[in-house]
Length: 401
Ligand code: SF4
Image (cartoon, rainbow, N blue to C red):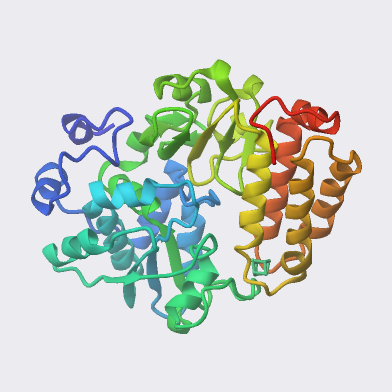
């Protein structure tokens, strides 16, 4: 760790949300201007740090930088603050608390890539006013764009499509945005939390970044807590035990039937998994990922099958209606889960969920049906005892209608 980072009190997990206020003066007083870093150096330190995207997919950031850097035209860099995940509040919180860290990250990438344009895309639930003020205060050439689009609005190709004044729906996956994106240029789309990490990484280096987290999953990340605990956004180290997070947020573990991790394309974890480490290695045993950092604690008085069925019903309405799995499979998956959520359900519905998953997975132009089907299966796995209750004609949670 550099002496500078120590002096600033950035040795703990409070990195992204450490600023005392969101002003440019406070930002420059504590951190100074973001240094200019050449692309090859930026790729190198990002690779050494092991930084992965914090928007949900967890893709290695260095690989994205390299792919766009290899383009022959000057690229466009897009900060993604769409926050389409219904339960997520981290991007909004980060932009409100530390807007200049995000803008630093955007300008850092812009300079390293000699970008033609810098865009910050804000979703429907984010008030762009404060970040527009922050852009004006630093006289930056960053185009802040208010965007539409629900759950899928932040999907890379859907976002690029909207920026190109077309419908906010996913595009042909065979033409990746890093090759042809905004205005036909190579385009780098980076979640705003990832941008803020890059801004600190450029200042303090990969050794400092790795002082938090685990060797194979380093750094910190933002989590949005909701449900049967104290809600809010926290910054924690990768590898933090889920149970410690729940306890720290005042959850009564004995009253939880499960925790939804990662969002609506995420995974339900049953109580016996509550001490899992929130890292890629720790979660692999459950087929889970931290995704966009959503942690939703489900109170045992609520029927987990009804909650899951309602989420899949919501997801089935969020599709862009272009592909077979979303036109046919997703509504059937939602209907099957809704029927399973009623006590006295037909036992054949369990096999039907698995069959539909097989029909849906890998057949869409984007990962939406796959993620939705995976979530549905995780509900049946995590709440298998509750499924048995329903098949036996009972539900010991809130009675289903
Ligand atoms: S798979 Fe579904 S959400 Fe994705 S592009 Fe096709 S219809 Fe749209």
